[in-house]
Image (cartoon, rainbow, N blue to C red; front, side, top):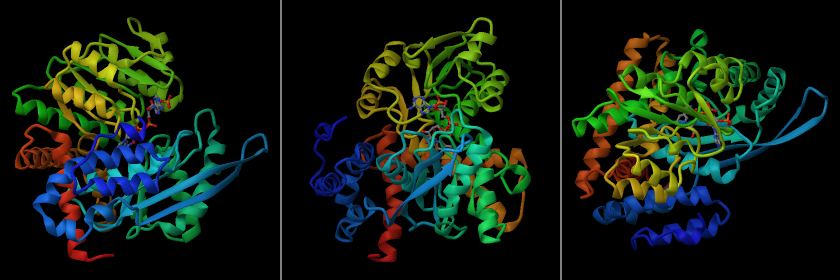
Length: 453
Ligand code: NDP
């Protein structure tokens, strides 16, 4: 998408978007995320002149603080490597900054800003006291030894630690940052600060302060959200074919929950291609390949009779009833949406952040497909992170079943808030508008109360 593709916005928000484009001309993903939110909240500003008078929209699109730093480290061959680190602390009006760290070669300022901006509204939707942030690096963990990943994490944290803390900024994982990386990052923070400050990082190992269900929460939550949307239509996961992209943290647990609800999850993918398994993805095998061996998805088809691997191509050409895109931003384009619609898809729930391009979202909505935006559908991860922070603060430890029940309730609440906001603003069934409005209302009320700051 180029900047000129953005359709005009309401008069109340167009100048805000013009300023973003002028100020951040080389940040297409950030512009895309801002455009979508401004489009939804135009009617809110018209109904609430006090928000317009207080410049809420102008202020919310500008991060409170942007941190960029050098990350030097030495690889196993003794060669010096230099990566760039980021932390965008977007809004702390609802609580300490909260949002994941992404390690992927595609990481740049635009991507981290889009993710940080989305995080503000997602975190607001959870109903918990957490602000919005995101961070990461253009470091690529693929093919790196454990020792290299550890040295990188130590260097990364030797700068980032000074900006973090349980009351200041609490990171978690994202693409390329799982349990291994969180361990190395937390260990470095503990060493530098001489504090075992459990609440400064979420997604920790369950043996050292991590909460049950945090690992599963994003994938489970995206399925729970789809379950809520289907229930409104008297439908369910029972007997459905589910298409899932990615094969990382979100994808694996979306597959697990969809299967537990009586569906057959038939696809998984990575950046090399996708696999189709009509009998249902064998989760133990997928986890062995992806989590233990850190291998490629082609291995799955080699070891699983009846499964096939398609190199390149689009996973969305596989006929499914429900789709849960769970890899990365802008992975599902208009042609993919058209293929899914032609194959009779009923619901799409974004496990990843902004995986569907705007034209794909419009196509789903026009075709009457239930569509859940990532900031609502994948909010289960950060909601469970907030539960981890609560458990750390009170030195408690909740059982798996209790945590899952709480996650289930929170996803129901987010669905209801998004659904109701869409009704209130005359766009029933539009979960994109509903989620943006419900999240924005909470942030705007807090910004108004706390003054121009
Ligand atoms: P992982 O690193 O565990 O997995 C990412 C998966 O997506 C991998 O299979 C990866 O394949 C694939 N992928 C990544 N980038 C690309 C690309 N450019 N093209 C094709 N495939 C790609 O990450 P997560 O599962 O944690 O995150 C997935 C998505 O969910 C992201 O959008 C993230 O922001 C979002 N999310 C994650 C949360 C969490 O709790 N983890 C919370 C909320 C949202 P390969 O290995 O080949 O790169």
